[in-house]
Image 1 (spheres, helix red, strand yellow):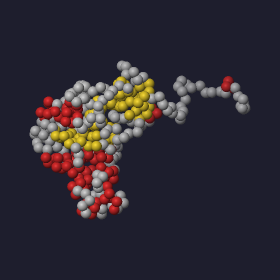
Image 2 (cartoon, rainbow, N blue to C red; image 1 turned 180 degrees about the vertical axis):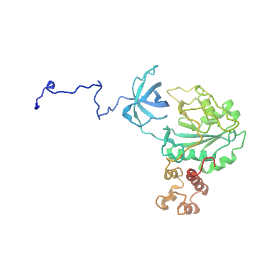
Image 3 (tube, rainbow, N blue to C red; image 1 turned 60 degrees about the vertical axis):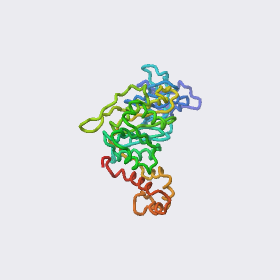
Length: 346
């Protein structure tokens, strides 16, 4: 057997031929320091449409990211062909840290959570006051998801010409959630969009709501250049709407007055999500929901360890009874905490 010394010549070392003709695997991963920054606009069957320096670029996830998935709203690092030309494909090599996440599960027994939107500032919960009837339990669940994920909620009530909003607004008054009430006529003449737009400027807002409430109609009014979807109608037999949005989509907010927003310099972003008929909360840690009630947090110092804040020994009862906070706030907190134990239609 031939032994090699310190001064071996390269030709003296035998190497096995690589039959596959590809490069050998290595544990060293490139840093991609030259990757361009982009924002994910939509995801469709493994292809991600991103905005990079004002250009729309189609990309796919690099293998080195493993199972880590990018979602709408993610800030990502992209390499490859960034021209945006037809039939070009770039690679997403990095997903930046998220400032917020909107997550849901299929139901409360499903252990697998799904990130719907990343880096949104606000969650607009759209619900009709009639046709279809409002579903307070679904609103509660969306509020819990917003508080858990770090999004500020906004309640948008549509079709107030068919039913009064007073009862629903009273239910959520103690939460201090900002709201906009609109009529069907205001949807037609653009007044509804203008009133909602006041809450969206400079923000990234995700819209959520079950089918038939007018969510997609509102989004189309806020982003008039979007022609991708056709508004659906409510089924007269079931009272349910037909889904008109099949995947989340980020769109630049139109300027006030209905003008088109510049794609690269949007005044804000609107993320339309598919209509939901259920909103599972199996992923939510109840201990995080209390942080959406900063006026109640000091009262939890006397709570027993791992207190759910909805049990007989909770210190919040005495603390609120002593006048430190509004009892309606404690009731609202406990209603949200118990929403996992109730079905959305109850």
